[in-house]
Length: 244
Image 1: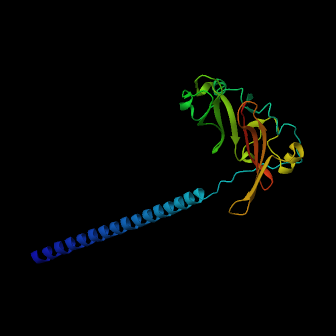
Image 2: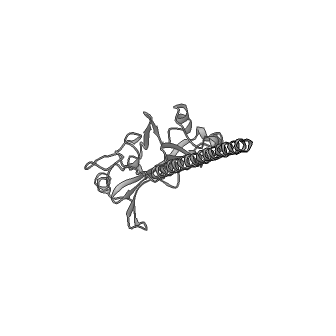
Image 3: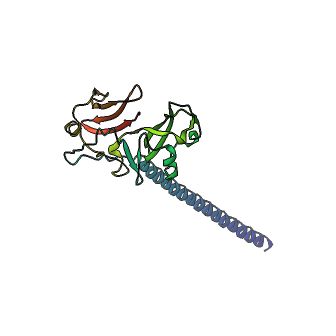
């Protein structure tokens, strides 16, 4: 009788250990399955995020070029007596307006660290002053001291202005006393043949032409200039420089 009890106890204990082992295996299996599901979900999310990020970074940025809408006429393409430009509603004239005039009007200029530099008498100062018109496109300028005394750069008159890629710049951002969008044919019809013409092609075969109009200085050895650069016959860069 005692032996039967012992056997019964042993059988019961064996069954309990078996059930515990099964429960442990099942729990481990479930944990492993959960880990696989979580890992797979994270991997899919990571792949989707990477794919989306890659797609966004590969989107190209294109600039919109303005196009002439028709023939343009102006008598001011070679107005050497009033070489001016307008920015933020204020008009500045080469040889008259100073760098300080722009500063007083609140124009944000690069290169202002050099505004206090002393410029020798009767000399031009090249310091890279510029106005950002749009990102990566600026109007650059130089100043000069035509007096017989030293002056800070801020008190010197503006003597040149150059604007590149004018067709990328929204209409009205910077203005001249002539239209800012025209063809080489429009220019010649209005101002006549240039004093100098330089035609060339870049590596991809795109034709360029630089039309230069000049007027001799009454005081110095040199010229006032309007320089117009055309790409495929349409204006691209506008530059003007003044000397008394």
